[in-house]
Length: 581
Image (cartoon, rainbow, N blue to C red; front, side):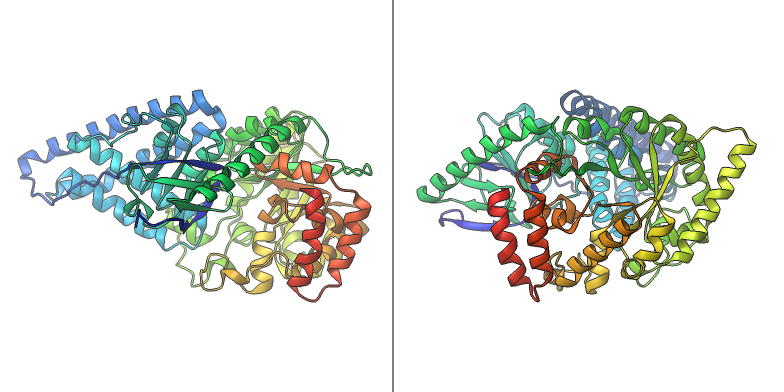
């Protein structure tokens, strides 16, 4: 395989950029585990072996935490906290103890317990949760390595700049890439939400993941080209291909240097129309990086992280502490906090609710539906949000609203919580704005009704597109039908924008469509007021906005809305993107 020229492997674009270099193959450690019978008089000692291995693993993780914190800062070191949370999950030690008590050796007990957890995660149809199984496997390998007295191979033998190829990389491996000046990396497994991909983006290392079995088809010393933007690698490229990519690399470097100059500039068109560029965040440790990239607010604070890797619901105090930390750091900039957007099936898998497995959780008991069914979950979060609003500018947003009755019921609960806080003499922002995510077609169709009863709206395109087009976006059989440029989707966006503007309120977008600069001109032309994107996308979106005029993109949007098919839409959009990019 490695003797053939220009062999292309396609995977997932995890971190943008181009790298050209020689392969350093980091082979994965595999442990040979056997089931051993432990005599009754040795079982306490076996538990002690497990305890020692867990404590050694915790110490190792703290060292890794420090390295990531020193190199990338607080906003990325939380990744190791997820591993520590998995390690500290009481069910891990409890279930392993039970197996050891029955005579199973510690190594096999750890394997069986973690394998059961991993299998439960594989059944969940959600990209984020599927990626978390890799974190569980990473923690398991660390424990097993310490039980067996074996350490994972590292990059100590790397003597020159290279492109690392591996089955998988842990966060610690990824940081080591920075220390060794690695040009890029490639893995068999992983996706855009994997921790390895997140760290790679923070380090600005080009990366392609999810290449299935590429690590078995290359060898150390092979020359490859890594294109982290397209999500592909070229093995043994010809000289002509190498020269082509070297030119692209130089052009990308020049563009990246220019983008850093945009940090303190406004998102303003050439004819002086200003919009807001906010950031999407997952937890309270990400504020520094979004401010560094020039965000003027948080357009989506996903609160689901607070419910992971635990066996009880987050308390009101926990909610308050997390949210108040963020809003204090954001100072005068607004923070839009979305109430929990998890399905009952996921909470049940984590042991937090007694809910039977749903056949179709995407259309089941989730988000605002879950909160209205189990108001205690909702009330604790609302109290935490309201109390935090005394410390900064918070906007509250409900997810997955499908009709006006749900909105009114949610607001009734909110008002009761406010009454209770007043009786307790607890301060909160009496003028806190309330908004909704429009991600269900039924809500988009009655936006004129909904917009009269909220202060703002944010379009969640990820779900809106899959619900409107009846496409499961993570189903490989129909993924090609998931299309942000479908005429129906663009008309939905325009209808939502018009309904909001007629009611005198702003409309933003926090789905992936908002973070793709290719769509920026059309979204601007359709009237979007706010773009909420991942931190790394902020300068790129800002550059496009500053390179076009509102008059031109409005004209383009009008033309596109008259189109009957995607081909016609793409032709028009490509023409304006030549100017914008």
